[in-house]
Length: 239
Image (cartoon, rainbow, N blue to C red; front, side, top):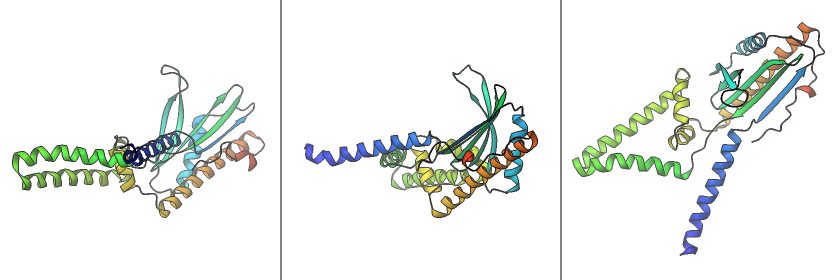
């Protein structure tokens, strides 16, 4: 019996380990850069406006721009403003703020894609079965097929609607739903060559926009321009 169950338990363990690793990867910056300008007074709002101007000039498609407040520490600690640039699952979060007598800038890049695993499909099928089986016993095959088709069509249409840029809030809500979220991302946000190229161009556009904003700051304040080496991320990119 143990020999028969071993392939199944090994498969489940492998899937669980892969899912755990993926979760860690989503919460870890794939790119991080930070620099401090000594004896520099500058407005975070002006820096964010400069980044915004540079990114708008590039007409990045499907780009969502937002400002988010994040706690500096515990729940009741002060909150710091971050400039968030998001395109599908690639999220850039930029921070500019005073630090002592200086001014610092940081840029983090996250990949928050999620991939569906075996149990995600199993659970989704179980939910559909739980809806249609009682209907089958109560009203027969025809009605149960109609109900199943209606539920499936409704879910499919909802997920298609969420892929529209104007419904980004719905996209974010669905992708966070347990079990259904990963299935939605796998089907409607596949990691194709085209999407990889688009994401690389988006990341490059964000990086250049930040670098140009930094160049404007150093020029305005009469500071030494940063070198290419100083713009390199301090963390290796994780794939």
